Image (cartoon, rainbow, N blue to C red; front, side, top):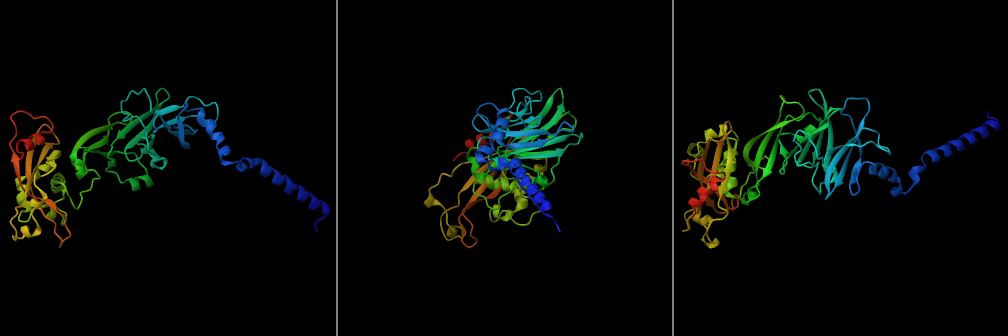
Length: 387
């Protein structure tokens, strides 16, 4: 049985314990705008006026010592995103931090656009990953939306942090990003997509570049090798509207795949025939350097053939249109050839729920010019043969 003194002591202890909790946790009772003031002071120590912190400090460690560094994303100028690393704990009176991007000075000339992400990029689209390099040296990989890929590593006390950036306005492929995010590893190669911004944007076409990490150079350096034209998401659409898209799909379609190609060919045209006319077997050593088509066909809508015409019950003749493709050998891009494909119009097919479309009916090799033509020679070929 407890005596009265024990009860009194217990009450005093409980009281003192509650007082301690309130004192230690008192800051959590402040309004939310006041709770953030401590961090605002910290940010002001490292960010100039007009630059705003994006998120909070993130612990990183690239220099191999026992102390963690701290990375901070921020917005500057018109909303571009930059990043800095500070070696000290985030607290007032910080030392001058390392600004990763933007920066004025760099001896590697690999900074890409010089920003982590463009204006308008939401905070949740900027992701930071720590990976172990093969040197072995740790690396940071920063994905700035889908267009900016930045890699950071430690170059030593004398040189600070190295930065390499790849920029592709159409995004990056060649990496299974969802799987990579679950288990990040050094990026050895990646494909950048660069959208065409003229009339060929209707087919969602991109120039592609393969970036491969160089093992023979210090630091992190990527070589760039053009891969020719492809669809911007790396996938061949099942349905194509514009003539240039139809021809590109015919050229890229895997010959071992079942189905799909038949919708790209004019009825009566066989795949072996078309492959022979276009010298398709050479494509394994080539890239598709350029493609050109007419933006429209000079016919009025009422002149267009109908499904009845296709079945021999009408008098309208299906129009044709050319598409020119320039091929370049991968090993020696100065060796080029040109092929003009003929496409035939197909009216809508209600039975198969197919829209009106173009199909490939033939191909003809264009004689090579006596002198090396300038880029865009396909457009000159079409202009010469314009109706």
